[in-house]
Length: 315
Image (tube, rainbow, N blue to C red; front, side, top):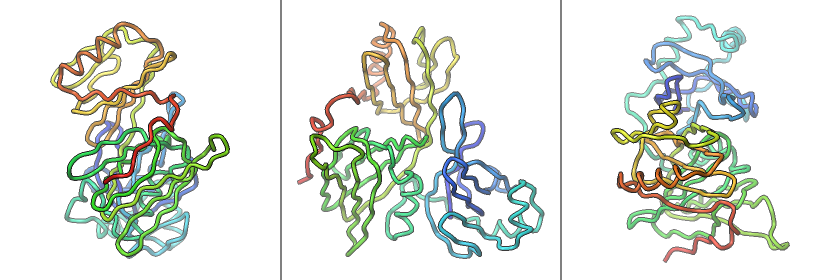
């Protein structure tokens, strides 16, 4: 197994996952440090200021060489003493040297191509089964369609599809679970909706010959009011640098409600969710500046009727 890891400085790196104990919010694992020289025990999620965000996001589910491989427990070690050392976060040189044999020479691709059930399992694990998640945005290009999901588990999933794409999916409709199918080189994800509307079951799915996914960590900030901001060198800082260094790219999702404003700013591996509780003129000024920075600002309303936002089947 391999994963993206978010360190304490918000830098993202890749590491083999040497042990993974999956137990809901109490999940934890063993990975390398950024230098790939030491083993560290790491919590799957971090909780801060009433928010949770992921620290590990799987990019594949390859179990080759794993001594212990059960539904909720994976490990390259099978001796009780080694497992105990993992639990307390104290590792021997012998453990470290053995773990180094799982380091790959080539870096993983930005998007993980789904070719096997293990790839689907990595997607499912990253998304928490899409439980409580919803489709946040769709980006259609000549080469592919990109579906961005907020998993609400402290991370996001971008599913990229092409060739014989067929889909029936709604923006912002809450998902309870998903079922994946891989048959005759056709990839399909069926989503179960959390709530029925007017006693009518909503059928949602994505199907395509080519499907890949990319996971994003989440950094969420809440401010009572946007007092001031500055954009320097494609980085956003607000309230006199209380929140600073948020990178900007060409696509920003802007959601406006009477109670608060949401800005989703997508970086390379992190989506920054800026929540402003009170609407002021500064919000309009910020949106104007973002557009002047040649950012594509996608305005949407998460609290609209989802059925008005139906994404039609592709031609």
